[in-house]
Amino acid sequence: MRNDEKGQSLVEWAIILPIIILLFVGMIDFGYAFAKQHAVSQVAKELARSASIGETIADLQTEAFNMAGAIINPDTITHTEVSNTSVFTITATDGKQVIITFDESLKTRAKGKKFRVLVEYTYVPFTPIVNNADIPLASQYYTKSETMQSN
Image 1 (cartoon, rainbow, N blue to C red):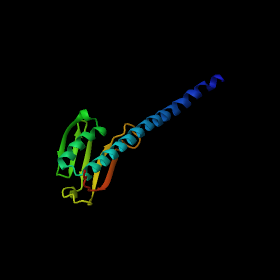
Image 2: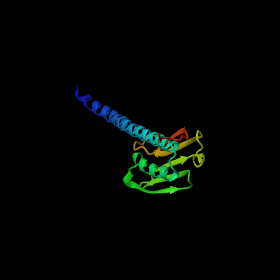
Image 3: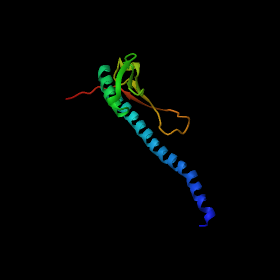
Image 4: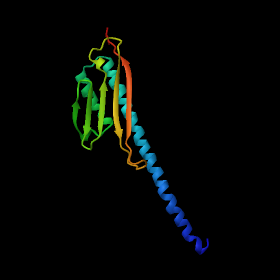
């Protein structure tokens, strides 16, 4: 390498290194978002299953509070706000929220009646790619009310 070309590779690294770091951190951030989406989906699925076999609204709210620890840090959960019997919000100290919505038809629960469970969470990425845009994650499950019978 000639003496007048030594600075060239340094400049090339100065240009490429931030892009490589951004790609690496972006992959990690995507992994976290994917894991949170999976947790949101699992919480909705489990709550729908529990609701379909006839658990009470109070039991479902307790179960949802316990399961929200898979989405947000359970040590930071401050309170649960129940706006009505169908929608309630679990809030953490850092402002993160998990919103769980049950269909109103869950109150009557006639056998074979279809109802929906919706779980919503907003993921805040730590990679500033697009103006620090939050990513809304949601999952909903439809199921039918069933009766379990033991012989």
